[in-house]
Image (cartoon, rainbow, N blue to C red; front, side, top):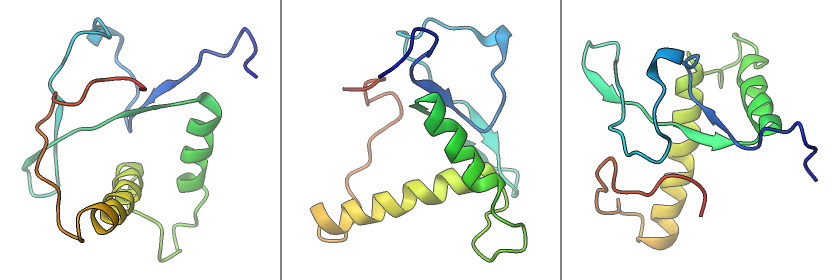
Length: 113
């Protein structure tokens, strides 16, 4: 049960929010692009989670020892690899292990359903 001070689901990204980039949450927006190590740009993704979930997700990466073989180089890598595990599982379960047809950015409705 949520108390009255609980802000509900929060957006998680690997960057601090920028107050100068305020947008109408209902307006569709193209995914920002970030440069990877090779200097190529990559689309950026984000998701919503409850505050407790966000803190636990961040803590799981942060408190994994840097000497551990499973420690990702960045929080972004941690989130990406977690999503890839789920993606591969769904491809195996629902599509014979093959990739699904591509879905362009902006095609999926925002928010929980």
